[in-house]
Image 1 (cartoon, each protein chain N blue to C red):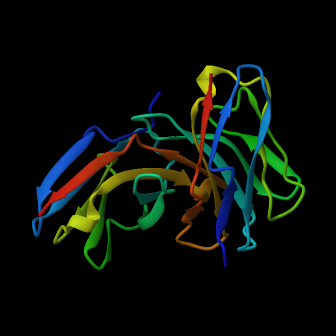
Image 2: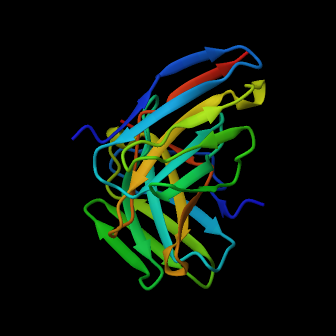
Length: 114
Length: 113
């Protein structure tokens, strides 16, 4: 049972345009969501997060949107740069329930074309 | 700070052999995690720990054991290695404050043949 799903294995975007990466979850207990970026042969690095009490969080070129009723979140990257080419994972957790386990999606490989 | 370190970077094991993957962090984080990543898949949680002396199973614990005798170290033990354990293993740690992000090590690539 995949509780966190990233249904697009890959995405190609032109440099300067917007990249939109999507993530769906099934467990309504999740109340904290994170996005990680991963380059080949490296560990994932944290990008941005959002609590379920918010519907949007921005950090520079990165914005995460949360739609709780649809159990859907998305990561927007504007403008996209070639250095953004990486695999992006979304992850969900339920810290309000006292648990700090993270469930990860399968990732979306983003390729930004120069 | 070195952050999260993992050793070794690469290892080839024969079926039935055992080994320990080492993980250490110098950020005084209470929470530590072990994940495996299979090709084309996300990260699956093997075991995690909320502090020294406390460990719990994740999604895929079978075939693995952990211990947490200190805050800094969280080794993962593979007993009787099987080809299904061929994967990339990541260790991570997390502090108690928001935004609750995990810090990951560089990974250990393990092949069991």
